[in-house]
Image (cartoon, rainbow over all chains, first blue to last red; front, side, top):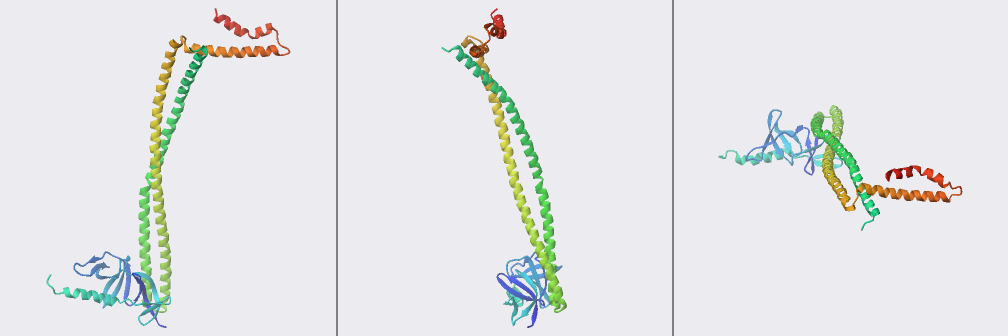
Length: 123
Length: 228
């Protein structure tokens, strides 16, 4: 059986898997500032401005991922474990239980979509 | 109309009351001194405990530093594990296990630190309770001091009243209260003496009248002088 490396996280009551190829690092939750009139929030990590997507109530950490070669922070995730897990078609198996891979790219795209109507509109 | 015996008993009671009131002053003085000592000791204890909050804050601040350092160490171990996972088998797995062990150790240290902080909070609450108790005891002690002061004043008033009563009693009785008391004592002692003489006369080898007279010589002599 093949294995996948990554993070086992908890988002609210649900367990999810974040591949190591996507997750770059986990940092202590910095000060996050909402961007006015948008569902977006921003923060500063290592001197770089990073958009933040909230997947739940703040947990004290920010999971920094790389999507489309750009850093994106995900808050509201509780990191349970890191390691190699048995792979399934849509996630991994942890303690005999299937844990789906989190659709972080989808969450990020939905945010971009929410921003789109506002682009080019007069203030 | 009162008998000389009633009058003497009255005088004696007054005398006892006066002596009791005089003796009370010593007891009151000891109670006042003990109260003052108690107040001072409570002040000292309270003063020592009042210095504790500053030390508690310093301790809490250093605990917070520990906590933050351990949290950072835990995150570093997590990120090391993530890098190891990205490396893949076999090198990555070894580093991953090491980082897992490290996270576990740091997690244990964090739990111990949280228990430590909880104990510190508990001891601070206990100290607050202790300080409240000391303050209450201090108030009670001050109240006892006030009551003792009032008792002392009342004792003084009573002494004055007894002295006034003794002074007023002389003209009423037609004699000095002190003389009346001495006469009573004399009467009681002479009764006892008469009883001793009667007992002696009943003894088989009873002494002669002359011998008894010799034994009573000091009394007879004192009696002769008092009637001159």
